[in-house]
Image: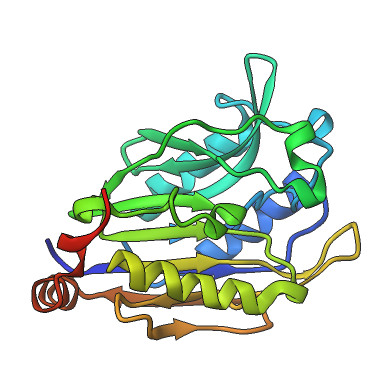
Length: 254
């Protein structure tokens, strides 16, 4: 396993406007450093966290997913972020993972945010996703999943890094920061959390706090309350040596 170079894009989102957001992220992806292996966008990056699924939905053969494929091919980097997707008369908060060769993987958000009524509109997923990127085994999750450690458990080092894409409001920012650290520590892995900034159409404020946490629970890269791109190299040697030196994973409940 080699080091992994990852870029996280923290941005404002134009409320319920696919075209404006895809244009915005096209520009931002163009600013990403060369040699990045994985680019991560926020939850519902083309609309903001909306319950207007019937009006805003995309399909797997639609323009937003095609846009992700195109950007991945152009940059020769994997690209991940979630969209509103309709499939078989159900709506999903679906994380799409596009690879440069056009391959698509996806993960449907398991834990729907009852506080906002998400469970009334969307269908929950029923399985995990594991994607290999530059030799790293990566497990993606979506926002509210972060609160549920059983769902995110890393038994027998099944994954090397977890990513959480989110629209996580500022009023619960301390939860976001604490839980990202907890998931990294308990799972002995790198964790990347990608959030948005700005104000959405419902008046909710977002402080960002996008960051990368190492397996010791230390913030190795982060940003606060403005648009930015964070780029960091995840060290394979540091991960492997820590797991060998402190093998708590061998004593995990199964």
